[in-house]
Length: 393
Length: 203
Image 1 (spheres, rainbow over the protein chains, first blue to last red):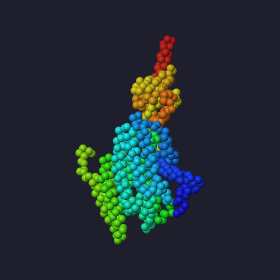
Image 2: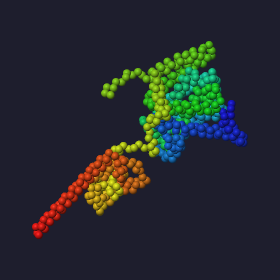
Image 3: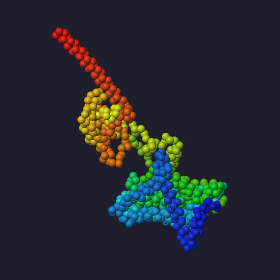
Image 4: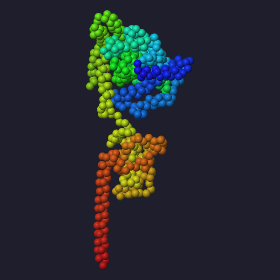
């Protein structure tokens, strides 16, 4: 355990040791909160600019490059613009609920970060029911979205909110079902324990959950469900600009709008951090030779990689239609996660027998998951006769 | 199989992403204030007044046809009181006031179309925003007057045609004047001869 790895932990202890004993526990909590808000606030700013630049490059544009060097101060300009804009509240709006909705969205998501281990000894709370807590506070975002849609007194807001609820509840199911194999096989709801369960190295390569058949399938199912859960393209129907103006955000402006934006990105970060913890070994290095790297560095590299994939997907896939969206969840993701559960069970019990070869276990798992994937995938896109365009061309 | 299309699309976007860093041709963006594309020759924005030589030799004769034809009625002309000689040596009025309100002007180009003196032409300037929306957008004679060289620079083929025609006119006019002078001289000689004859006869 080198010093760089624990630099933040030592810094915190040193700061606490300067203080009288009575306030130490309180200051410890405040320091954790400040660290999380500072780090993920910066992540938010960086992600918005890098996302816009990345999407620009995908479309063969430069992206924002005017404010500051390479446009890196663009988030500052955006923040100033958002803060100085007029905050319009509709006359017929339910003022209190309209005011509270962005807060209800943002605050629980900050709470969700508290259980995630960002490095060795670096989780704010070592909660025994960490995963449960995470999904419980994550569930508050549905409430916030509906508060926003209802209080705006706008049909677009309401329709957008109802879409958002339908979508988020539909995708909450596969999201949780995809995490269950991890919880089953590591035997704990504690995220620190889950990271510990992925700590070993076989032939110099880490034994993360993603390197098992159920983990591999589960990781992708989790990522897809997470995309929908955080309202990102191609599942950004709640705020479908071309269909329902901006959905539940229609009547929001200025800083409240910015808070919704922040909440959305923080939700994405939280669920990404969770996916890193559950499937990509948390803060463990991918190879044994890379173990000298600080644990928090490994965590954030994986984190950034997954965010990059999210941006990449956003730049590629067009928005779904709403029936496609719900069909995709209930007819494809949910059955596949259930099959994946079965795969995890089989994987677990074949390892207990110990007689079976590793490749045979992979073969059995693949024989379960691949036909299911093909079958449900085919059922999702019914084989319609190809349309003949009589007058086209 | 489900997902193959998405993978194909992801490969395509990745190729675009990395390609935009490798090949400059992919980035078609023109970074406007620093980089500017030359305007197309036929581009037109607001009118200008062409002069030959110096500002005192505007081609405009204050005839008022453009003022009359302008659908937006954004041209205002006041004739000067003194006449000046034009390129053909004819005495013509010049405008004392020639104002165009470019907040009203719709760049239709009818003024340039109807001008019989090749004076009013369409400019290509487009960064015309000002701090003052009234006086800043009312352009006077001094703002509108542009040298023939400038006109050549923005509309080379039109300017070349016009100059050729004007040179031709000038040449013809000079020939005519020369012929007139010669005729006059001949007539003078004739008349002097005739008077000489009369003198002889009288004598």
